[in-house]
Image (cartoon, rainbow, N blue to C red):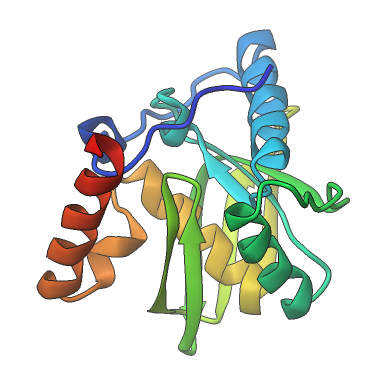
Amino acid sequence: MILPILNYPDKRLRTKAKHVNVVDETIQTLIKDMFETMYAKDGIGLAATQVDQHLQVMVVDMPDSQDDYQLLLKNRQDESHKQPPKHHPLCFINPKIKEKNGQEKHTEGCLSVPYFQAEVQRANHIKVEALNEKGEVFTLQATGLLAICIQHELDHLKGILFVDYLSKLKQERLLEKTKKMTNG
């Protein structure tokens, strides 16, 4: 089922997600619905917070290249052209970053902040530990775009948006633009 996505500046996006105690059928259904929602919106990542489920669950499916990622960003603005789903799905339950190294600036977009992109600096190599959709613990070393995406989605679980990394002036301009788009 495709779930509605909360849009900036909805205050519910600032909710800190709760730890998942048991990976049961309810959580597995949420994961399935999150993947379906993410694919329908041409996303590469989605946190449960974005679909108003405040649990530490996030899904990621990376494009094969930087060019594929740029195409996805363009597709969000052009609804007539849809990218077929990718085939690298990852689910993270109760994710925790164990190591961070290096820095990389990358243009980020967000399904909760449609039609807006900005450069954000993040670690370009991380080690993350989480549970998968079966409740099994796993550790993943991620670099580049995958590392950035995981950090972006993990921020959502903490009530942080990528726009929070921007200057106050850029945040104010985005808020004004968002209000005009939703009221006008």
